[in-house]
Length: 188
Image (cartoon, rainbow, N blue to C red):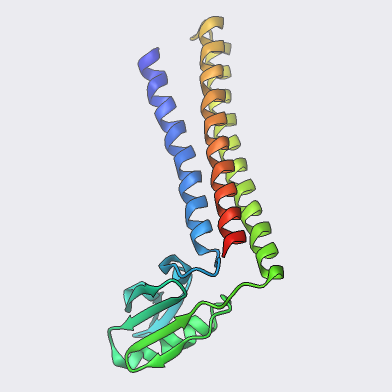
């Protein structure tokens, strides 16, 4: 029985890790006034008759804390890359310099910081909801085995406690990540 449950626990852990990874990506996309290549992840460029991620047509670098550079590989795509960055709704104003697109990161206003903090809170709550959904699935599996009498009352209680401990650990990680992101937003 314990080998079966270890496999189930690994599955629950993997799914909760997925919620944490999604949160990490969402936080990376929040512009905090500090340059970060992940800021341009949502940008899609029209190139060669298709729409593709910016990192498939250019190299993204951060040469200084408030500047992102985008080295476009094909000279004919420089205008499309500039337009894609400008139209992405990120509040960025790129400037073209040959095949290099410079993207200065503007200072954040107090109002924008508050918006970012709220967005970070929404992302964290979404991650908490995802972790709780995984917990609910795990608890449902345990209860189903208990009803089928494939698990004793003691085992049922033990695995319910294990699932709750796992959930608490992941919720704590989410809260720590949120606190760190809010601190980063305030500091910039």
